[in-house]
Length: 405
Image 1 (cartoon, rainbow, N blue to C red):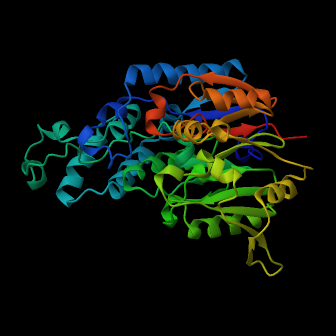
Image 2: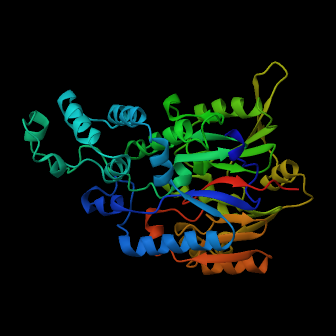
Image 3: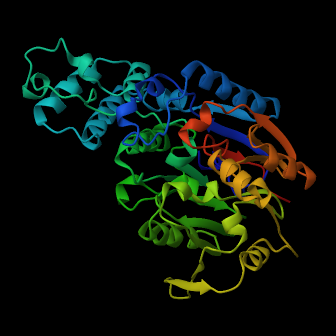
C-alpha cells in the first residue's frame, strides 16, 4: 500500500511512527567490547525500558500511532517460506566464518517461531546457545573469549539509523559499521513483505554497498532534502539516492560536508528542524564551518553538482521559501554547556507538529532557549537511553506526517 507512507517534511503533524523498545540486546553489551559494539556505556535495561515507554506514551498522548518494529517484523514473516528465506539471508550477512557453523545456526534458527526468531536476532546467537549441539563441528570446539557467533543488535532502538521514509517510499540503510549491518535486513523484509509497506518505492537499499544511514537525512520540504556526507553516509550513496529522488519529484538535494568522526556521526546530531523557519543547531553549524553543495537534475537526466559559497541561512531560506530562518544554538553557544548538551543529543529533537518537539529533559539550557523562541517542548527522561548516543529523533522512524499547507 504505497499511500501508507507519507513523509514530505520534518515538521508536519506526526501521525504514525515506528519504534523499537530496548530489550534483551542491551544486556548483551560487554565492557571489554564496547568499542566494537558502538557503545560508550551499558544502559540499565529496566530504566531504559521505562524511559522508552515514557517516550511512546507522550507520542500516543499527542495523537501519534506507535508501531513497534517487532510486531511489523512478525507480520512480515507470517509466511513460513519468507521466514526460512530470512534465516538464509541473515546467515549470509552475519559474517559467520565457517560453512559448518552456518549449517548449525541455520538448524538452530529454523525451529524458532517468528517472534522467537526476532528474539534470537536481537540477542545474537551465542556460544552458550549451541553448547548442547551434537555432533560438534570445529567452530564449536575451538575456545574463544568472544561469546557471540552472530552479534546482538544492541543499537536497534535507534530506528532512524536503519531506515527512513521519504515521500511515499523508503530508504533501507547500508550501515557503515559491521556491528549494525544485520538490523537493516529486518527493515528490508518489512518493506518487501508487510502489507502496509509492500509496493512502496525503495529509494536505496543496503545491498547497494555504499554507506547510507537515516540520521543523515532531513526532509526539509516536498521539494528539498538535506543529506550529511559523514562518517556513516558516503558520496556514492548520496549520488545514487539523489538521482532516484530528483527523478521522482524532488527539486534539490543539499549536501553538508561533515567531519568524519563519531562526534558528528549524523547530520541530525548537529541540526534538526523544529518549525517552518527554525532549527536547533550545533554551534559549529551556526558558525558555518561545513561546506555545502547542491545537487539538481540537468535536462539530460544527469546530476548537476555545485559548491555553495553562500551562508547556510541563505541556502535554507531559498530552499524553504521563507524570508528568514532562525538558528537556536545547542547550549546557547556557551562552550562548556554546548559541548555537554551536544554530547547528550541536545539538537536531536523529534518534531511532532510545527513548533512542537520532544527532547531529553537533561538538556535544560537548549530546552529553555527553544521555549523562549516559541517552541512547545515536551521532555522525556533519557539517563539510560542517551548512553547509546542518540536522542528522540534517532529513536523514531516516522512513517506518516500530515502534509503542510
